[in-house]
Image 1 (cartoon, rainbow over the protein chains, first blue to last red):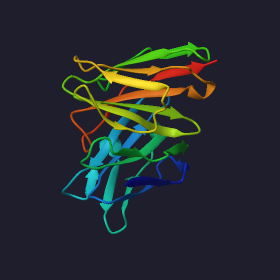
Image 2: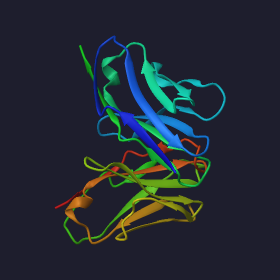
Image 3: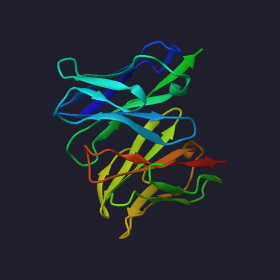
Length: 113
Length: 113
């Protein structure tokens, strides 16, 4: 069985400040990990994903995430927040099995001037 | 644009009615997933089809059913609708399964009055 926990349903950051969104997972097998972003009234869009190899993954829009197996975490960061980063962010975990793709509850990011 | 199309964009209907949501996956993708997104439940996985066959079931009610046709488009049928079925319904597609990136459509917003 697998599960995803996103810490903090709402995060407020100042423009130019660090964005840090936390995601912890549990999985009985090596996981594949994803971060998706959802802008208002739109579908989800992939930011980045970890499958194998380098544990620091770079994605679109300046985001990156680091897979830490010992901490079962896959936190998302961006050094400097932009107003356009205001959106909801979802962490997801999958395994190499059918349909085992689970999303976290989501974190709403608000960027203040 | 993810390449996944969903119709209709909006649907307003009454309790007890039946509706059909349609999804066309990205060219070349064999897997189709359906999700329900609501304020109280978050993003819930409903069902997955791969190349015409059901592969995984999530939190899908018995009043709901889906199928994937030979041309790989998919339909989600919702019957005996209740007020609580009001939600955004997303379709996503991927090449195969599990670890593959899912590409999301823009969603169908269902309102049950």
